[in-house]
Length: 289
Image (cartoon, rainbow, N blue to C red; front, side):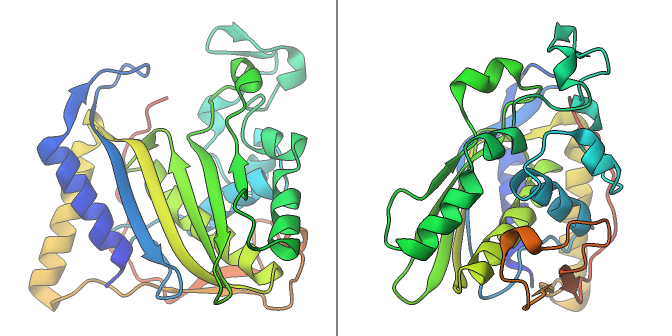
């Protein structure tokens, strides 16, 4: 059984049963809970949902857009068949949601995500520190830079990651999310940051260790509830029929790549793939912008 499915669906049920009903900036109300934490041992299995299909390639390409290409240009994603940022793309005239960002930000998401990574050389500095000073306790990537928030189309949801190398040669990672759309965003985020940890570990000569995922505001939009209930039904019915869920798939990374910036980031994603990914099919749910 995928341990991610187990923890994820328990969280979903908790939100449905105990979540606070609240309005928000999108105009679509949510059921929400504060301060939820999931933990995984990445050495024991790759965390991706099997009770529904998760678009693994799209998730990884988005992660590489942020941390490897270090881009804010939505066209980079579109060229690779990834449309998940289209709703936040600043227009050709430099405007988005009635706000004028300036034409220099046309086709981008403004000063967010990859733009911040590039400006502060966050990945380069992280890899250098892991290699040269692995016991350092200040290995932090922060995408939340106050001076650049006004010109971000969407301030970073996954805004912080903290890194630690244990004495047994394992790379551990804690990710902090200020606000998580549990049905749509969270499955992507967990899988893509798990891949990021694997990639950084490989280029630094380490093994993967503990992955801790912390959500400040875990929510389900009210127009996603039926989709989540369907996913919970899938789990219950499969366990009743087969006795268990699908096992977690295996992550394959090209072992010959030793530089983070050499991993293929084309649409084919030649250096990164899932093997034996079995799932129970897609569940379509709306996104709130």
